[in-house]
Length: 476
Ligand code: BG6
Image 1 (cartoon, rainbow, N blue to C red):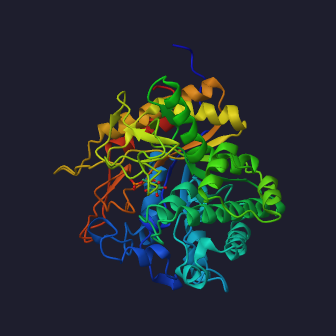
Image 2 (cartoon, rainbow, N blue to C red):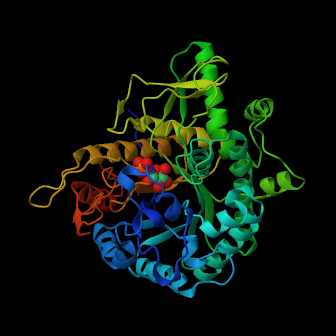
Image 3 (cartoon, protein in one colour):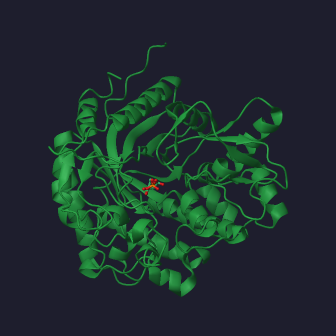
């Protein structure tokens, strides 16, 4: 075992959330309706019909939540802004009451020595823009998203130094337009790749705006990175893993970092008739935007095998493997997903693979030479509140500890990592899984009846992270 490099002194030990999953207050202070507010009301879309109307009431309890962060010693808190609080109809007049909420939240964090990390878009698109021009399907969104971002840049200049442009563009485009699991509930690969291209342009435009305004701080997207492995050394399977990495990872990361789509993946999409429409000026815009870091949400790896042209996934295209079902998924002619026999799985069938995080960080470092901010990593599990109000989540401690160790190893290998945000701070609403799948350091008494007391309780993992932060990750 080699000697490991220490974590940098100013390493950002953080934790994360997203507006729709924690805030509640869905109609308060002038907030407009988002596509999620609408989508969850369609019967059968979410677990037991849960919605974020109340969520864990962070909108009213943010002071209590920040007090818990402070006591724990948290250095950074990543949250998202609900676009519909700032522009209830997506554009037009600023809703000052909505802006004021985030101002209070940010000021409170700063007052407590916690670095705010602001995500501009965590999936809750204004419904008005969906109705008006089909949201991400129209290039009008580039201008509207940039204007919304600029409003926040100006409002929080000098207070917020870490900005995340889009959260998991690969997930919201795939689940929204291929798997119909997220709004707008479409299954059409051509539309998905068109939408994704427009999202790339919007992302580039916002990053350029940030730099044009000479904002003090850093901006980057957060990508849901699932590094790909081959099942074995059969060259056909190795090629399948390369195909998966190209189509499922580099297809986003290369665009963020280089402004270019990977060649083989683009060839494949062209042959299928799914390639996006590239207009004059698009390539220049994509290539001109340089993020300051790459945000990575890491949960698991994926293992791949050869998939013939008439193989798994023919006729549909379920590429993500994110849903954790035992259904076989793949892209015919490219790859199919198979079980990795060497790793364990969560109760939602997500593979537990800390080494995969080290591997992913090394790939990013070699390919892009770009600092990484880990914007999410965590374990969703059933937690049990004991009679004396404790939560013994040793499985979560084990998961997080092994991933922190993998980061330390990656840093020792030469990766530049700015910080680590666990998912999530408090328990919160899982988009599709209700409240049973918990991620937090802080247990919240809320469940599918949505009638919990909303009281907060510290889990064992809360104390574990407190100590880790205090020691700056020394004793792993
Ligand atoms: C990420 C999202 O994809 O994974 C989060 O950015 C989400 O918003 C998290 O909650 C966990 O996913 P799930 O489906 O387990 O809630």
